[in-house]
Image (tube, rainbow, N blue to C red; front, side, top):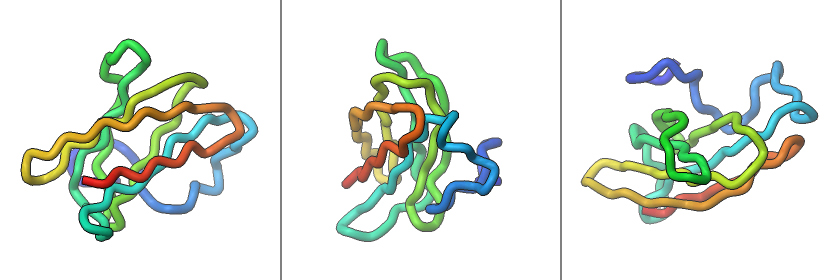
Length: 102
């Protein structure tokens, strides 16, 4: 598990138990100057801006959410007081990729 929350470890590869035919996945990487940022918080906000979930980025700067189909915002809160929002659309059967540069 990731330190600081109950989310599973954030890795680049989907767990073998994930069936993309039944899941919509939002996955991304947080980078600063091209280098991964570990320990940042990635928050998932719904279309109305309401908080839905939060995970801590891995050592490789990776985060992942399983979400319903639709429009979402990923808000990254990184060390140094940096906050960046990225819009993303989730769709069952796909991995919506997000690269967040801070």
